Length: 390
Ligand code: GTP
Ligand code: MN
Ligand code: MN
Image (cartoon, rainbow, N blue to C red; front, side):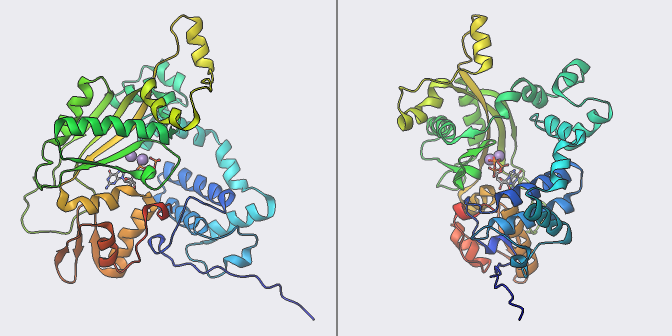
Protein backbone atom coordinates (compact mmCIF):
# COMPACT_ATOMS: atom_id res chain seq x y z
CA UNK A 1 0.00 0.00 0.00
CA UNK A 2 1.42 3.31 -1.08
CA UNK A 3 1.20 5.93 1.61
CA UNK A 4 1.32 9.40 0.20
CA UNK A 5 2.98 11.75 2.59
CA UNK A 6 0.58 14.48 3.56
CA UNK A 7 2.16 17.76 2.64
CA UNK A 8 0.27 20.86 3.44
CA UNK A 9 0.18 23.21 0.50
CA UNK A 10 0.17 26.95 1.10
CA UNK A 11 -2.62 29.08 -0.21
CA UNK A 12 -1.74 32.58 -1.30
CA UNK A 13 -3.52 35.33 -3.18
CA UNK A 14 -1.75 36.39 -6.35
CA UNK A 15 -1.25 40.13 -5.91
CA UNK A 16 1.38 41.16 -3.35
CA UNK A 17 -0.98 43.91 -2.13
CA UNK A 18 -3.46 41.22 -1.06
CA UNK A 19 -0.85 39.64 1.17
CA UNK A 20 0.91 40.56 4.39
CA UNK A 21 4.65 40.43 4.05
CA UNK A 22 6.67 41.18 7.17
CA UNK A 23 10.45 41.39 7.40
CA UNK A 24 10.38 37.95 9.01
CA UNK A 25 11.33 35.98 5.91
CA UNK A 26 11.36 32.19 6.43
CA UNK A 27 12.75 31.49 2.98
CA UNK A 28 15.72 33.83 2.74
CA UNK A 29 18.00 31.40 0.90
CA UNK A 30 15.39 30.95 -1.83
CA UNK A 31 14.44 34.62 -2.04
CA UNK A 32 18.10 35.74 -2.06
CA UNK A 33 18.73 33.57 -5.10
CA UNK A 34 15.60 34.80 -6.90
CA UNK A 35 16.32 38.44 -5.98
CA UNK A 36 19.85 38.17 -7.31
CA UNK A 37 18.52 36.84 -10.62
CA UNK A 38 15.94 39.65 -10.64
CA UNK A 39 18.68 42.20 -10.11
CA UNK A 40 20.75 40.67 -12.89
CA UNK A 41 17.77 40.83 -15.26
CA UNK A 42 17.17 44.48 -14.36
CA UNK A 43 20.84 45.24 -14.97
CA UNK A 44 20.53 43.51 -18.35
CA UNK A 45 17.55 45.51 -19.60
CA UNK A 46 15.22 42.53 -19.13
CA UNK A 47 12.63 44.14 -16.90
CA UNK A 48 9.97 41.53 -17.67
CA UNK A 49 12.15 38.74 -16.36
CA UNK A 50 13.13 40.91 -13.44
CA UNK A 51 9.53 41.41 -12.37
CA UNK A 52 8.81 37.69 -12.76
CA UNK A 53 11.66 36.82 -10.38
CA UNK A 54 10.60 39.61 -7.97
CA UNK A 55 7.02 38.31 -7.89
CA UNK A 56 8.21 34.75 -7.27
CA UNK A 57 10.47 35.94 -4.44
CA UNK A 58 7.62 37.97 -2.95
CA UNK A 59 5.33 34.93 -2.83
CA UNK A 60 7.97 32.98 -0.89
CA UNK A 61 8.58 35.93 1.46
CA UNK A 62 4.92 35.89 2.45
CA UNK A 63 4.86 32.20 3.44
CA UNK A 64 4.44 31.43 7.16
CA UNK A 65 7.19 28.81 7.23
CA UNK A 66 10.17 27.48 5.30
CA UNK A 67 9.51 25.60 2.08
CA UNK A 68 10.98 22.11 2.31
CA UNK A 69 9.63 20.45 -0.80
CA UNK A 70 8.33 21.36 -4.23
CA UNK A 71 4.96 19.74 -3.52
CA UNK A 72 4.20 22.50 -1.04
CA UNK A 73 4.34 24.99 -3.88
CA UNK A 74 1.50 23.42 -5.82
CA UNK A 75 -1.15 26.03 -6.48
CA UNK A 76 1.00 29.00 -5.50
CA UNK A 77 0.75 31.97 -7.88
CA UNK A 78 3.60 33.71 -9.74
CA UNK A 79 5.96 30.73 -9.83
CA UNK A 80 6.99 30.31 -13.44
CA UNK A 81 9.09 27.48 -14.84
CA UNK A 82 12.35 29.35 -14.47
CA UNK A 83 11.69 30.34 -10.85
CA UNK A 84 10.64 26.78 -10.03
CA UNK A 85 13.90 25.43 -11.49
CA UNK A 86 15.83 27.83 -9.26
CA UNK A 87 13.81 26.79 -6.21
CA UNK A 88 14.29 23.10 -7.00
CA UNK A 89 18.03 23.61 -7.33
CA UNK A 90 18.23 25.33 -3.94
CA UNK A 91 16.04 22.72 -2.22
CA UNK A 92 18.08 19.84 -3.64
CA UNK A 93 21.59 21.28 -3.62
CA UNK A 94 21.53 24.04 -1.03
CA UNK A 95 22.25 26.74 -3.58
CA UNK A 96 21.19 27.87 -7.04
CA UNK A 97 23.91 27.19 -9.58
CA UNK A 98 22.51 29.91 -11.82
CA UNK A 99 22.55 32.50 -9.03
CA UNK A 100 26.08 31.46 -8.02
CA UNK A 101 27.34 31.65 -11.61
CA UNK A 102 25.73 35.07 -12.02
CA UNK A 103 27.32 36.33 -8.82
CA UNK A 104 30.75 35.25 -10.13
CA UNK A 105 30.31 36.63 -13.63
CA UNK A 106 32.59 39.52 -14.57
CA UNK A 107 29.76 41.39 -16.24
CA UNK A 108 27.48 41.25 -13.20
CA UNK A 109 30.29 42.27 -10.87
CA UNK A 110 31.21 45.22 -13.07
CA UNK A 111 27.58 46.34 -13.42
CA UNK A 112 27.15 46.18 -9.64
CA UNK A 113 30.25 48.23 -8.93
CA UNK A 114 29.54 50.88 -11.57
CA UNK A 115 25.80 51.27 -10.91
CA UNK A 116 26.75 51.42 -7.24
CA UNK A 117 28.00 54.92 -8.05
CA UNK A 118 25.23 57.42 -7.29
CA UNK A 119 24.16 58.97 -10.60
CA UNK A 120 25.23 56.03 -12.76
CA UNK A 121 22.46 54.02 -14.44
CA UNK A 122 22.54 50.79 -16.38
CA UNK A 123 23.00 52.51 -19.76
CA UNK A 124 26.07 54.42 -18.64
CA UNK A 125 27.58 51.41 -16.89
CA UNK A 126 27.13 49.29 -20.02
CA UNK A 127 28.82 51.90 -22.19
CA UNK A 128 31.79 52.00 -19.86
CA UNK A 129 32.02 48.22 -19.69
CA UNK A 130 32.04 48.08 -23.49
CA UNK A 131 35.02 50.41 -23.36
CA UNK A 132 36.78 48.11 -20.90
CA UNK A 133 36.05 50.10 -17.75
CA UNK A 134 34.96 47.58 -15.13
CA UNK A 135 36.08 49.17 -11.86
CA UNK A 136 36.40 52.43 -9.97
CA UNK A 137 40.12 52.85 -10.46
CA UNK A 138 39.83 52.31 -14.20
CA UNK A 139 37.04 54.85 -14.30
CA UNK A 140 39.14 57.42 -12.47
CA UNK A 141 42.16 56.78 -14.69
CA UNK A 142 40.06 56.94 -17.86
CA UNK A 143 39.25 60.60 -17.14
CA UNK A 144 35.75 60.10 -18.48
CA UNK A 145 33.67 63.23 -18.19
CA UNK A 146 31.36 62.74 -15.21
CA UNK A 147 28.33 64.84 -14.35
CA UNK A 148 27.91 66.53 -10.98
CA UNK A 149 25.90 63.65 -9.48
CA UNK A 150 28.44 61.07 -10.63
CA UNK A 151 31.38 63.07 -9.30
CA UNK A 152 29.66 63.26 -5.91
CA UNK A 153 28.81 59.56 -6.14
CA UNK A 154 32.40 58.60 -6.83
CA UNK A 155 33.77 60.89 -4.12
CA UNK A 156 31.48 59.34 -1.48
CA UNK A 157 31.37 55.83 -2.94
CA UNK A 158 32.33 53.99 0.22
CA UNK A 159 29.93 55.84 2.53
CA UNK A 160 27.03 55.58 0.10
CA UNK A 161 27.49 51.82 -0.26
CA UNK A 162 27.52 51.28 3.47
CA UNK A 163 23.98 50.61 4.80
CA UNK A 164 22.34 53.43 6.71
CA UNK A 165 21.33 52.34 10.23
CA UNK A 166 18.14 53.28 12.07
CA UNK A 167 20.16 55.45 14.45
CA UNK A 168 21.61 57.32 11.48
CA UNK A 169 18.15 57.65 9.95
CA UNK A 170 16.90 59.10 13.25
CA UNK A 171 19.78 61.58 13.26
CA UNK A 172 18.94 62.66 9.70
CA UNK A 173 15.27 62.96 10.71
CA UNK A 174 16.20 65.30 13.55
CA UNK A 175 18.11 67.54 11.13
CA UNK A 176 15.31 67.57 8.54
CA UNK A 177 12.70 68.31 11.22
CA UNK A 178 14.78 71.20 12.50
CA UNK A 179 15.09 72.58 8.97
CA UNK A 180 11.36 72.30 8.31
CA UNK A 181 10.44 73.88 11.66
CA UNK A 182 12.82 76.75 10.96
CA UNK A 183 11.48 77.62 7.53
CA UNK A 184 7.75 76.78 7.82
CA UNK A 185 6.29 76.42 11.31
CA UNK A 186 3.36 74.00 11.34
CA UNK A 187 4.69 71.92 8.43
CA UNK A 188 4.93 68.15 8.99
CA UNK A 189 7.71 65.73 8.17
CA UNK A 190 7.07 62.00 7.83
CA UNK A 191 9.63 59.22 7.47
CA UNK A 192 8.75 57.13 4.42
CA UNK A 193 10.47 54.39 2.38
CA UNK A 194 12.03 51.30 3.93
CA UNK A 195 12.47 52.75 7.40
CA UNK A 196 8.72 53.37 7.63
CA UNK A 197 8.27 49.68 6.85
CA UNK A 198 10.47 48.84 9.83
CA UNK A 199 13.66 47.94 7.98
CA UNK A 200 16.77 47.99 10.18
CA UNK A 201 18.98 49.43 7.44
CA UNK A 202 18.48 51.24 4.16
CA UNK A 203 20.33 52.55 1.14
CA UNK A 204 18.96 56.03 1.89
CA UNK A 205 16.51 57.88 4.13
CA UNK A 206 13.24 59.16 2.62
CA UNK A 207 11.00 61.97 3.90
CA UNK A 208 7.64 63.40 2.89
CA UNK A 209 6.80 66.97 3.91
CA UNK A 210 3.44 68.71 3.86
CA UNK A 211 1.46 71.45 5.60
CA UNK A 212 -2.07 70.99 7.05
CA UNK A 213 -3.28 74.05 5.13
CA UNK A 214 -3.49 73.40 1.39
CA UNK A 215 -1.10 75.61 -0.55
CA UNK A 216 1.11 76.54 2.38
CA UNK A 217 3.57 73.82 1.30
CA UNK A 218 4.35 75.77 -1.89
CA UNK A 219 7.97 76.86 -1.97
CA UNK A 220 8.87 74.67 1.01
CA UNK A 221 11.53 72.60 -0.76
CA UNK A 222 13.87 75.42 -1.83
CA UNK A 223 13.64 76.91 1.66
CA UNK A 224 14.47 73.62 3.36
CA UNK A 225 17.31 72.98 0.95
CA UNK A 226 18.86 76.39 1.44
CA UNK A 227 18.56 76.08 5.25
CA UNK A 228 20.31 72.68 5.12
CA UNK A 229 22.94 74.07 2.79
CA UNK A 230 23.60 77.13 4.95
CA UNK A 231 24.12 74.83 7.96
CA UNK A 232 26.64 72.75 6.04
CA UNK A 233 24.53 69.57 5.87
CA UNK A 234 24.54 69.14 2.08
CA UNK A 235 27.30 67.53 0.04
CA UNK A 236 25.06 67.36 -3.03
CA UNK A 237 21.48 68.15 -3.95
CA UNK A 238 19.32 68.21 -7.02
CA UNK A 239 15.82 69.59 -6.70
CA UNK A 240 13.16 68.88 -9.31
CA UNK A 241 10.21 71.16 -9.66
CA UNK A 242 6.63 70.15 -9.26
CA UNK A 243 5.09 70.15 -12.72
CA UNK A 244 1.80 68.59 -11.66
CA UNK A 245 0.10 71.87 -10.78
CA UNK A 246 1.74 73.64 -13.68
CA UNK A 247 0.53 71.10 -16.23
CA UNK A 248 -2.59 72.93 -17.36
CA UNK A 249 -3.38 70.61 -20.22
CA UNK A 250 -7.13 70.67 -20.15
CA UNK A 251 -9.55 68.35 -18.36
CA UNK A 252 -8.58 65.88 -15.70
CA UNK A 253 -6.78 62.95 -17.22
CA UNK A 254 -5.76 59.82 -15.38
CA UNK A 255 -2.51 60.56 -13.61
CA UNK A 256 0.54 58.72 -14.85
CA UNK A 257 2.84 56.68 -12.66
CA UNK A 258 5.57 59.25 -13.10
CA UNK A 259 5.01 61.52 -10.23
CA UNK A 260 5.67 65.19 -10.27
CA UNK A 261 6.05 66.32 -6.72
CA UNK A 262 8.73 68.72 -5.83
CA UNK A 263 11.53 66.49 -4.72
CA UNK A 264 15.16 66.58 -3.83
CA UNK A 265 17.74 63.85 -4.23
CA UNK A 266 20.58 64.71 -1.89
CA UNK A 267 23.70 63.56 -0.12
CA UNK A 268 23.86 64.63 3.53
CA UNK A 269 27.00 65.27 5.49
CA UNK A 270 26.02 63.69 8.78
CA UNK A 271 28.34 64.70 11.64
CA UNK A 272 29.60 62.01 13.99
CA UNK A 273 27.97 63.67 17.04
CA UNK A 274 24.59 63.62 15.34
CA UNK A 275 25.02 59.98 14.30
CA UNK A 276 25.88 58.88 17.82
CA UNK A 277 23.05 60.80 19.40
CA UNK A 278 20.66 57.99 18.56
CA UNK A 279 23.06 55.11 19.16
CA UNK A 280 24.46 56.12 22.51
CA UNK A 281 21.11 56.18 24.20
CA UNK A 282 20.76 52.55 23.20
CA UNK A 283 24.11 50.93 23.86
CA UNK A 284 25.80 53.24 26.35
CA UNK A 285 28.91 55.31 25.76
CA UNK A 286 31.48 52.95 27.33
CA UNK A 287 31.90 50.90 24.16
CA UNK A 288 34.74 52.19 22.03
CA UNK A 289 34.14 52.83 18.32
CA UNK A 290 35.84 50.12 16.29
CA UNK A 291 38.81 51.52 14.44
CA UNK A 292 38.51 50.82 10.73
CA UNK A 293 41.49 50.43 8.44
CA UNK A 294 40.77 53.72 6.74
CA UNK A 295 40.46 55.52 10.05
CA UNK A 296 43.75 54.00 11.22
CA UNK A 297 45.49 55.10 8.03
CA UNK A 298 44.26 58.64 8.31
CA UNK A 299 45.32 58.76 11.94
CA UNK A 300 48.84 57.74 10.94
CA UNK A 301 48.79 60.63 8.48
CA UNK A 302 47.75 62.86 11.35
CA UNK A 303 44.33 63.64 9.88
CA UNK A 304 42.24 61.95 12.54
CA UNK A 305 39.22 59.87 11.59
CA UNK A 306 36.67 61.49 9.32
CA UNK A 307 34.17 63.08 11.74
CA UNK A 308 31.13 62.58 9.47
CA UNK A 309 29.61 60.23 6.95
CA UNK A 310 27.77 60.79 3.69
CA UNK A 311 24.13 59.60 3.59
CA UNK A 312 21.71 59.58 0.66
CA UNK A 313 18.51 61.44 1.55
CA UNK A 314 15.36 61.84 -0.57
CA UNK A 315 12.92 64.65 0.23
CA UNK A 316 9.43 64.98 -1.26
CA UNK A 317 6.83 67.71 -0.73
CA UNK A 318 3.13 67.14 -1.29
CA UNK A 319 0.04 69.29 -0.77
CA UNK A 320 -2.16 67.97 2.04
CA UNK A 321 -4.90 67.01 -0.46
CA UNK A 322 -2.55 64.43 -2.02
CA UNK A 323 -0.72 63.47 1.16
CA UNK A 324 -2.31 60.02 1.62
CA UNK A 325 -1.48 59.08 -1.98
CA UNK A 326 2.07 60.33 -1.63
CA UNK A 327 2.49 58.48 1.67
CA UNK A 328 1.21 55.24 0.17
CA UNK A 329 3.24 55.70 -3.02
CA UNK A 330 6.56 56.41 -1.32
CA UNK A 331 6.42 53.86 1.49
CA UNK A 332 7.09 50.92 -0.82
CA UNK A 333 8.26 48.31 -1.24
CA UNK A 334 8.76 48.87 -4.95
CA UNK A 335 7.08 45.58 -5.76
CA UNK A 336 4.20 46.30 -3.38
CA UNK A 337 3.66 49.63 -5.20
CA UNK A 338 3.81 48.01 -8.59
CA UNK A 339 1.29 45.40 -7.51
CA UNK A 340 -1.07 48.02 -6.08
CA UNK A 341 -1.11 49.82 -9.43
CA UNK A 342 -1.58 46.55 -11.31
CA UNK A 343 -4.45 45.58 -9.00
CA UNK A 344 -6.06 48.99 -9.45
CA UNK A 345 -5.78 48.83 -13.25
CA UNK A 346 -6.57 45.18 -13.94
CA UNK A 347 -9.05 44.35 -11.21
CA UNK A 348 -10.76 47.69 -10.54
CA UNK A 349 -10.40 49.76 -13.74
CA UNK A 350 -8.76 52.48 -11.67
CA UNK A 351 -5.49 54.34 -12.05
CA UNK A 352 -3.43 54.80 -8.92
CA UNK A 353 -0.49 57.17 -8.67
CA UNK A 354 1.31 58.96 -5.85
CA UNK A 355 -1.05 61.90 -6.48
CA UNK A 356 -4.50 60.45 -6.92
CA UNK A 357 -6.82 57.54 -7.61
CA UNK A 358 -8.94 57.79 -10.74
CA UNK A 359 -11.98 55.61 -11.31
CA UNK A 360 -12.26 54.95 -15.04
CA UNK A 361 -15.84 53.63 -14.81
CA UNK A 362 -17.15 56.63 -12.91
CA UNK A 363 -14.78 58.98 -14.72
CA UNK A 364 -13.82 60.73 -11.52
CA UNK A 365 -11.12 61.02 -8.92
CA UNK A 366 -11.70 59.29 -5.58
CA UNK A 367 -10.63 61.38 -2.61
CA UNK A 368 -8.81 60.01 0.38
CA UNK A 369 -7.22 61.54 3.44
CA UNK A 370 -5.68 58.33 4.77
CA UNK A 371 -4.03 55.20 3.41
CA UNK A 372 -6.88 53.16 4.93
CA UNK A 373 -9.37 55.00 2.68
CA UNK A 374 -7.28 54.27 -0.41
CA UNK A 375 -7.20 50.53 0.36
CA UNK A 376 -10.98 50.70 0.91
CA UNK A 377 -11.51 52.42 -2.47
CA UNK A 378 -9.45 49.65 -4.05
CA UNK A 379 -11.48 46.92 -2.36
CA UNK A 380 -8.42 45.70 -0.48
CA UNK A 381 -7.94 44.85 3.15
CA UNK A 382 -5.71 47.45 4.80
CA UNK A 383 -2.06 46.42 4.94
CA UNK A 384 0.07 48.40 7.43
CA UNK A 385 3.56 49.58 6.35
CA UNK A 386 5.35 46.84 8.32
CA UNK A 387 3.50 44.25 6.21
CA UNK A 388 4.31 45.83 2.83
CA UNK A 389 7.77 44.26 2.64
CA UNK A 390 7.02 42.30 -0.52
P1 GTP B 1 16.01 51.28 0.58
O1 GTP B 1 16.11 52.76 0.43
O2 GTP B 1 16.86 50.55 -0.39
O3 GTP B 1 16.24 50.84 1.98
O4 GTP B 1 14.51 50.84 0.25
P2 GTP B 1 13.27 51.76 -0.07
O5 GTP B 1 12.08 50.89 -0.11
O6 GTP B 1 13.23 52.93 0.87
O7 GTP B 1 13.56 52.24 -1.54
P3 GTP B 1 13.66 53.70 -2.18
O8 GTP B 1 14.24 54.68 -1.25
O9 GTP B 1 14.35 53.52 -3.48
O10 GTP B 1 12.18 54.09 -2.52
C1 GTP B 1 11.19 54.28 -1.53
C2 GTP B 1 9.86 54.23 -2.15
O11 GTP B 1 9.65 55.38 -2.96
C3 GTP B 1 9.66 53.02 -3.04
O12 GTP B 1 8.41 52.46 -2.77
C4 GTP B 1 9.60 53.54 -4.45
O13 GTP B 1 8.61 52.89 -5.19
C5 GTP B 1 9.23 54.99 -4.23
N1 GTP B 1 9.92 55.83 -5.20
C6 GTP B 1 11.24 55.98 -5.38
N2 GTP B 1 11.50 56.82 -6.38
C7 GTP B 1 10.31 57.21 -6.84
C8 GTP B 1 9.87 58.09 -7.86
O14 GTP B 1 10.66 58.68 -8.58
N3 GTP B 1 8.52 58.26 -7.99
C9 GTP B 1 7.63 57.61 -7.19
N4 GTP B 1 6.34 57.80 -7.35
N5 GTP B 1 8.01 56.78 -6.24
C10 GTP B 1 9.31 56.58 -6.08
MN1 MN C 1 14.74 54.39 0.82
MN1 MN D 1 14.77 56.80 -1.85
